[in-house]
Image (cartoon, rainbow, N blue to C red):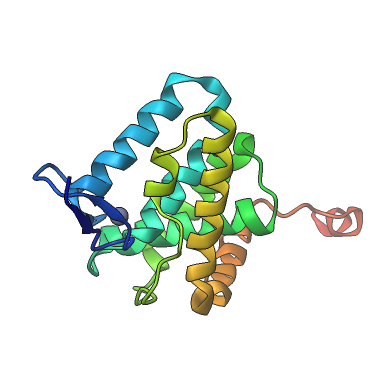
Length: 180
Ligand SMILES: [Zn+2]
């Protein structure tokens, strides 16, 4: 089957007509490959630890055009990649972190996507044949997607620290003394 380059991630996928996501712009073949990866991950709980990395990697490799939704999607998923890859966030804590990041998403701005969005794509994941191979392909994919956004890492870290500031601040004993 003839392949075509995805407008988002730049990966090669079979060429055919089919549905695509509303704002995560891709080729139909790429969107179908992502659907296959997701259904594999939903089919077996042993995929749980990498499932969110797959979602994050796909979202930041398919930024689409500037819109409120695409800006917020890229921002939130870059923040979560930063938490996973630079702060060792566990899959168990990911929802909490996502909720906090989502609270500040209205402050995010459009980041002009880098020319290359990474050397690994969902094409490298969909072709794997075992759970272990799938997991290591997702990790390589997520890392390359995060690395591709290098020019914006400082901005993402700023957004991340801003959202951490929304967490309850612990009160020290001396502070409590002043509360009347
Ligand atoms: Zn793609």
